[in-house]
Length: 428
Image (cartoon, rainbow, N blue to C red; front, top):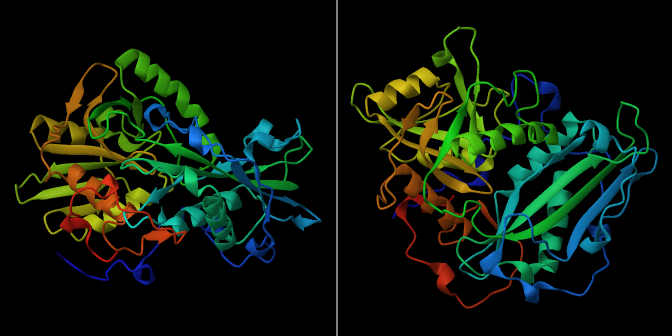
């Protein structure tokens, strides 16, 4: 098994929602004013986790007993962070700008139960930094991301019993921030609320590693250059629901793959972007037959810099059998590769789904760009990457990317699974 320290955190260059096109909102730590974990207050309610039914979990519909909140008001600063009953809800004034102008941002993370019995997070610093930068883009109150991460760990320790003890299951974490003032005027937010809620979840796509088809949307655009496509703000997501529902009703596809039109009149010159909930990767045979390429759209300001995306790139660059590139890819190139039998794999990735195989892209005229997927082929990029990532997330291999938040131990159960694959054993 390959052992190396190439992926120690000190060696990493982080792609954290930073675009060369938008330097004014790059991540900056060291906020002059912030809340502190040391001041955290707990007002706990009676636990209800005993009623958790793993067999009937639906993504994002079951929540733990508590949430974390902390509020900021201009002139008064940050209040104390609180862990309190989720049932008490959030109190939002009808004039709050979040309700009128969508002034909100959020993150998606997961906590996993490692085979060592410890609760673990996967590269949480990247999520915290991305949330921080997204909030700066909206001029929400500044804070120290490391303090929010420590508050999150405390919330996870409080809700530890909600962490599912089953492979493929996890505790989904939803941090979010919004402008919570009492004025409908458009301007710098006068009040900011941060909250974190937790939800036990199973696989995002119930089909597991069964492929799906995506609708190749050549009409709607997810994000334009100069916009906020590289930040996780609510306004990037609400407008994608209509195209997604329409695609499902018309073509039977559960998700949409967006494109960016080019200056050319040819639709083949349109550039592939990302899905509504996933970054996307393509595996192509090179035209000269010299090997295979793994390609994903570059971080040009319109693409969300996904944590899973970054992890896949870092892993794949140390697999000698692939040439890895972040490059623009057109519909025409994909059509040509598919027609020549060189489009070997397509897969999406994200915190919710981890890795999702895609076996075809459906166009509005009915043309389908086929990409074969064989679930029994354990050497495919999709299968290898799924195993490499989950080996790290569930601590089957040691990795700096897997961050424990407690010291609890349990007897190893079926969660341990098979032996870890060589692809993930890299001291990440």
